[in-house]
Image (cartoon, rainbow, N blue to C red; front, side, top):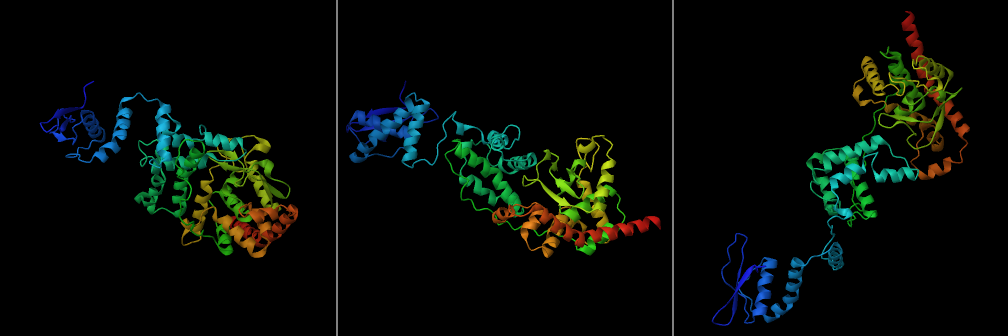
Length: 438
């Protein structure tokens, strides 16, 4: 194999080199500063390897110090190295802190970041989700779908062509400077970051990357926008007006009286209606279908006979013949309830009917905020409130709530509910009946 340089000896005895250039031509003569042919070869090879050609080299000490390095670099270019050899070399460089990380070809970390991230948030294919489910932890399809969509929209364009082992902390923190992200709500930005840091943390602990790029990232302050709620008098006015859809009105009344979540009401089946209470056993999601409640625990809430009768009347209209398993708020498909989004649509129409100034500021979940606020006004024991609302966010309160007599809590809640919420519904129902008979 021809050498990529020429060596010429001048009359002075000094060897000069001409380096083969990418265009096929040779460079002008460059002095190696030595009368030793073998040393001149080493110097010329160093210029080839490092792609640096000084005008001349005069220092013998410099030549001696570089000879081993030149030999090493030449060997790296010419030897047939195995993957084990490559790993040994990178381990040395990592140990000397000359590399922050290294990704070997065909290693786990060389997998395309795009393929890894899309699979990670794919509910049916993700090894992470399989691990969680095997360990008895819950994760819902709609949550995975949301984070996968954020990977597609915000992360894949930034990580084009990268493998999973190449991603660093800088690749993640740069998202905070992205113009498409800056103006989003803090909660949304944090969710976008989590869509990336959760898979990278999993990858780090499963030896897919040497980069710990998930710890220590400061997220945005979680300043949630305060939810707008109605006053009790406004709620009464809403239920007094004529609704275009009676089932939607009943769903809103149930949320107002019990503080139940939208998905929990949609998931109600005939078997969940007790003699004096509702058994809240499931929640409904268009992606997951019937699933466990948000905190993974069932609960109960007492209801008056009038509300129970209205729910039974609504359930009796279910045409699908599923008996106890039939949805109270049924849809066209027997395996699906009605679309709960309609409940908000008819609520906002009722708000327009009472001339409420900003109907779009009220959402179905506003009933839950109203319920917790008004119940908390009259019950100082947070454990009782949490027994009805199903909140499980404060560790110490959870601990003490375990020792609370559940039936006693339900009775306290019933008294408050019937003193605060029931009169509103009853007066609204009476007004509606008067309107019908007039």
